[in-house]
Each structure stands twice: as C-alpha cells, then as structure tokens.
Image 1 (cartoon, rainbow, N blue to C red):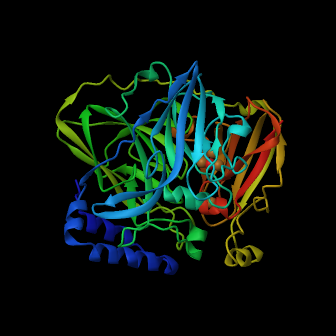
Image 2 (cartoon, rainbow, N blue to C red):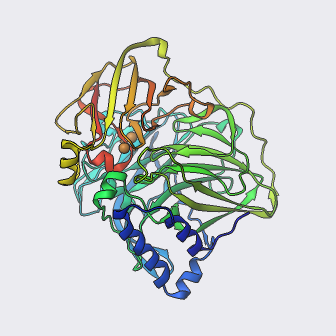
Image 3 (cartoon, rainbow, N blue to C red):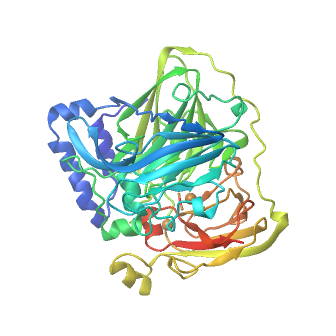
Length: 501
Ligand code: C2O
Ligand code: CU
Ligand code: CU
C-alpha cells in the first residue's frame, strides 16, 4: 500500500501539466507547502486528522411535521492547525449538519440568511414543489428567513442541499454553503445504517488554499472556463483525514461536492468494493467494482469490507475524458484513509438484492426534447466569455431568469437527448425528478448507472438519452432548472428553466 506524506501528495497533485492561468494558483500552493511553519506542517503530515463527521440533525417534531432551523452564516474554519480560514456554512462554519429526513414525512425548514449576500438553499435531487425548490427564484435576502414545507417523496437515498443563487452559486458553494441530506426508509434493505458507526457521510471537495490559509473565490479566466479546482482535497471539510473503522462492513455515502472536479474513485490497493446506491436511491443489487467516476452533484453509496488492522486510501486517480488537455477536469487526490481497528464488530452480510428502483419507462414517452450543450468557441461566445463570463449555452441560449424555455405536462414521460458538442465533459442535472439513463451514444447504461439519477456526466462528443417524468407538482409560474453542475458553467449560462403544468 502506498503511503505518501502531505507534501509529497500535494506535489504529486500539482506535478501534472498545469495550464498557464492555473499556474499562479499552483505556484502559491508550492509556496504554501514550503512556507508553512514547520510545526503546522508536521501536524498536517500524513493522514493525521480524524475526519469530521457532521452531526445528524433530526429536527424537531411539530405535530407530524419535522421542523429544521438552519442559518446560512459566515464563519472561520481551522483547516490547518493554527491557521484561520474565512468560510461559510449552515449551522456551522463550513458545510453543515447532515439533515435526516424519513420517506413519507412532511418537513418544514426555516432557513435564515445570516450572510451579507442574497442566497438560496436548493434541495438537490428532490421531487418538490417549485416554490420550495430553492433555486434562483427563491431568493433569501440578508436577514430574511425562508420556510419551505414539503413531503419527502424520495426513496432512501443520499441527497444534498446547496446554495443556488443566480450567478453566485459557484462562489457560495465554494465558501461552504452546502450540506448532506440522508433519507431513510424502514429497514434500509439490511445495509449498514448506524450513522457515524458503520454508515458515514463522505463529502468530497477540493479547494485552493494559499499559504496564509485563505481559500478566496478568485476565479481566473481559465477557472471560469475549466471550472474552479483546488490544490487540496477535503473530506467533510477535513484536510488529510482518516476514518477509524470498527465494523467489518462500512457504508460510505459519497457526494461529489466540488465546484468542477470529476473524481475517478477507487482505493490505493485496488480492492473490490460494492456500489449500492446512485443519486436517487438503492440500485437493484450491489454492483461489485474497483472504481467509479463521480461528477459534481452526483452521489454514490459504497459498501467497503475491511479486515482487522488494515488500512486503505480512498483516492481519485484522475481521468482523461475531455478532448482539451488544457482543461484537466479530473485531478488525482488522496482523499481518505480508512483504518480498521484490531478487532471489528460483525455486520450483516451484504444483501444479494436491494430494491426495485422506481423509474420512468421510455415506452410511455410522449415526446423527445433535444439539449445541445456548448461552451465558448472561437466566435461570439469566446468574446462574451472574455468580457466577463458567459458564453456557455444550452440550445444556443444562456440562462435568463425571465425566459421559460419550455413547459412539461405533469405526469408525462419524455425522452431528453443531451448532446455535448464541446471539448469538455458536462454533468447535466435536472431539478424535481429522478430519471432513468437510457443510453450513452446508443449503448445501454452499465448496472451502476441503471438506477435513479438526477445528474449524468455527458462526455465530450457524447449524446446521452434519459427518460424523465415529473409526477407530483404543477405550477404554471415558477420554473425548475436544468443545468451543467460544473458551477462555473452554470453561472456562465449553461442552465435553462422549465415549468410543469
Ligand atoms: Cu445541485 Cu440546480 O443543483
Ligand atoms: Cu438540483
Ligand atoms: Cu459544464
């Protein structure tokens, strides 16, 4: 098993060919490593910090409604011992508690904006009334409280909530305004389900730290184009983290909460593990694998089996995919060391089958829509992008809050065909639904992509077809979003709006 210390792993991360614009930031990273006081560096060397496990917020019951009180707030976080970093969080200085919802119950969330900017809080992955979606139209001004109420219609799954402010999503999520949502259902299919004991949240991100400990959102022109990537990997906001494992099987609820990085996950000893859930809930059966690709916005639940005393490192191995070598979309990172105790408690065996994921049926589709994703090329898009962002389009249009792109009938099944004509990969996300991937360039999805999805990575030159249906809510006024989940692309226009009527 490979062991790298902190500075080796950082220099490995930045030894890749570095595009010119990003070089400045990476040079700062070198300076950071070189100039950090020795004592502080020693303290962060290796996998030396226990990974933060955000508290599970159960809310409080008001009759039959489960009520949560959330404050989106500025804060200071000590990622590196002795260095304070300006951040933001939800009931925390960075990120927030994992909210625990139960399938079928009603929840009400009071979200107070204690930051200095307008913000929003979007329920990513939920079938939800448009007024409660938390997209760009549900703005919360500084000092205000927004109180959406909705029924939890989802299957047992790992969801999340994050800022979705028009033009500012990238900056606000970067600062820390995001949190996990765990949805449970009776029995949980017999998988490990003791939060914090054998069932763990694993929020993967990367951030660009300078030697004073700061991680400002300073996106260069290259960052706006490629998406903002960091020099330091974080798990639940912890740098160089380890997780003490005390059971034979552990369930990892992995969320790619990065602005732009696509993670190509696996373990450093190339061990076999199982993926048990995709974005919207359990797969039909555990899928044995040695690696999986996870794009921003996507979730995967993994079950890993450990032997007493052993250690293994969850890492992103990097990935080639886009056809533009300048835009390296998938960095290599060592994320998290799992450390098994000398004796491990028994857990139930991994079930052979898990669930029958409810999915739309393409045979019922009443129409097909086409979505062409384009990024700035050599023409007007490039000019617009150079003049301050923009130039990222869907079907030729940049996002406009005042334009509804189309209407969908409630309950109708549709086929959406997403074509990526450009040189980068784009994770395409749709609000208010869990969809079925029909095919990628005509090829049926692999088993781990055959379950419920709300975000799908579309490779350069690829066309992905999905079957989508909006069953529950209609609202002729308030739209839902569909967009690229590379947050810089979303903010630069690669987003559109539809209503369900
Ligand atoms: Cu996770 Cu529209 O976003
Ligand atoms: Cu969403
Ligand atoms: Cu994109």
